[in-house]
Length: 289
Image 1 (tube, rainbow, N blue to C red):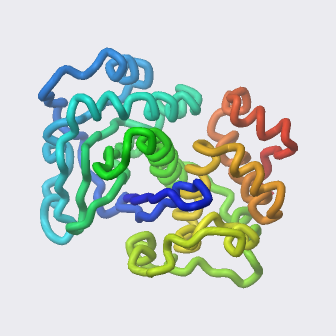
Image 2: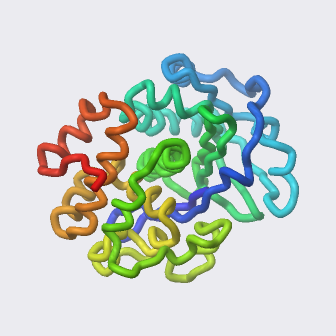
């Protein structure tokens, strides 16, 4: 799950935790609807062979999600807000080769607000089948329309990076090598590193002190997964910002090369995407070393 705020540096800082093992579930039933799904969303379903759920989400999750301590709850999304979420979702999915989405994402669940553990969260993902996974996203009521675009764009990449991390071999040794000598992720031994990190008052901190050590925020130091989540959201959502940081901070540059190597390894056509081409032209090439 993830909750984000926009820092003074313009970075959407992710705060969340993985519920993949805890929240695994069987494929949900056919999608109910209060109002017709727009033709735009129907086109996404057809193109990527995914399902999009936006009503009666309680029927798309396992029973124990609704029981304590998880206590899943949600506020249904309005038709207006549903359509507000379409542009960033469409833009996020388009940043991947179609096959990467088809092979690794089974559904999107959309809500106005999501609640887990009696706390508001922005997004989460769940592993539902070996090759199919679901991402749940919320509109977040207190965000204005201008903020929703970046927030949702970042959230898709943030959650999807966990799905990819769990399915494909990740160059963990190379990633960890970019961290300071002797560094250990603060909550990596915790069952829910992100949840534990959220209980720390300095979790939202960001800035040069973190960048110089190869992290984008205090939350990035919770575990390798959270580090990758925040990094992926920033690369896809604010590529120019991550490029500027990587040019200035060697450890972030090292992680950017490892990140490029991991994503390029998912599908060769990733290298034809504008993001990869622009980063390559700027001198950053894929590496797993």
